[in-house]
Length: 392
Ligand SMILES: NC(=O)CC[C@H](N)C(=O)O
Image 1 (cartoon, rainbow, N blue to C red):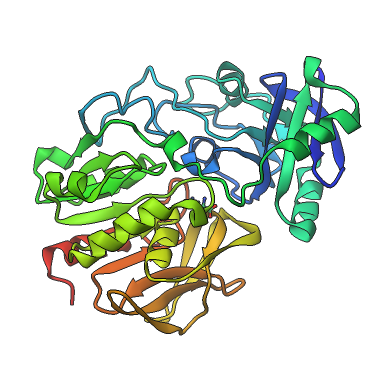
Image 2 (cartoon, rainbow, N blue to C red):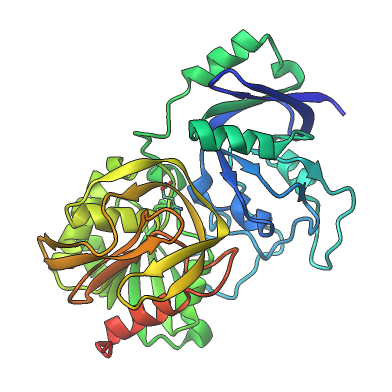
């Protein structure tokens, strides 16, 4: 096993073993506390340009399969496809810049596994590291905040100063405009389950995850996935019943075009729902600012309080930015009164906003739950009933 190092921009160096591909990779070091669902994490386009540090010590037990990947990159060449469609030749694109794990499993044990995690990382050229105390790294990231980092192995190993220079030369996640790098360039359609569409949604792809159209398709919705640079005319040409804003990588403060488009769409009266990056775009369309969190929320057991109903949901999350605001706030927008609808029960960070009219709402967490708990799946039902005009 050859040596690898994880170098943080504060100068800390962790020495372990090369895992997956050998070479050099740069990205923002962030930690994820999920104990399951590494395949969904690694293939989530929102992790583009991030090195994910897993707190769970053992990773890789279920290997890699062709069903759980969240990236739609391999499938979107088809113009129309069913939400149940699984391409068993497509392992799904890994979006993370690198993966840092402690103790990779030696033996894969799952009937669906077609390959191993390490093999998939190697095949896709994702430089990763194993054998480091990832929970020690997490303590540093919690104290200092997410920071730029690099993994180096093989010929890319050099003096600490040289590696540190490379780490510090990369752009920071604040100010990164990444949606176009992960979006489809051509529109495509995900059919409603059974081909029986009762509603049609135009979805702005800023890094959409596979389970989102699947959740909508299961509720009779046909999803027209549009590139991140779509215009109001592109949306109108779909003749949709609703508009969806996807998750995605990068800093929401850069997404001016998506914010302007969302404002036009809400102004036109179309029901609008957003997830994660989409929530941040919605917040900006409502006139709020976004800001970078110290170390973000990434995991699958994060409690969120619905400030309207008082109910708590355990949620899947992956975000490093948030909308400014606090629980109980109501405010004016260009489209009428709005409120902070959800906050994180751990730290009070805004986790959702909505127009009080109900026409537009969004959450910072992941109701599509891939991976993670299903507590929030009812938000897709809420979107459907808003589109049907049946919401009470
Ligand atoms: N999952 C997401 O959509 C992430 C949104 C944004 N890139 C953030 O880190 O906050």
